Length: 258
Image 1 (cartoon, rainbow, N blue to C red):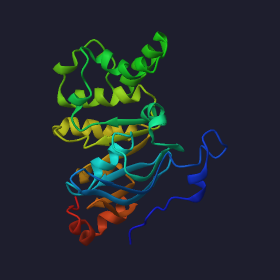
Image 2: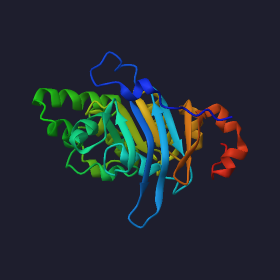
Image 3: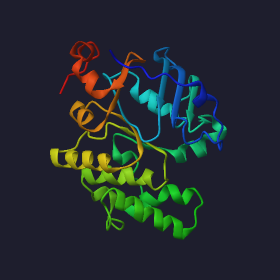
Image 4: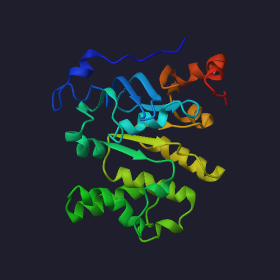
């Protein structure tokens, strides 16, 4: 049977800066519902907890609510219920802090790469955090090293391959020192070599991770925990190995066992 992770009372009441900070979840969602202006309910009573260092796959058919859920993590959308990042509510007064802690990488890297050079793209976040120049350079160098793109600083972003753009897009959020990395369909549009390279990169990154994807082969290889969404609800949440064995469950929610 799928294992559903229920939020704990202790995690809910922990305050920023308290002694329980390292033990509370990075992400805590409780009873989140959201409807679009046309009346379509995209999320219904969604509750989810992700702890530090977890790598979690978010899967489900198109229209399941995965992207809608992700956009709530940085306050682009706001529904009924609660979303907390490291104990901070995702609400207007906290958005600057929240967006420095949630590194969201969109499916299309061109949505994040808009500066003339790679260096400027990766430096954009730290620059707007008001950091000193020396710290900005340090963060850019480190982020490029983390994604295996050292030496690309002066390259033109729009001249890069799809796989290279994806890595630079990840670097643009890593330079913000996020606490959780959130990726939407990271392997989409990549050739087999770039896809394999990306999987190795995500495996090697030691950061809490939530990844929305249809790539079930990647899920099986990379993510110990899998959350299945369908029709705006979380229908299963548990060890990937166990859920992958439940073929009727996968089939009922538009998924295939790899």
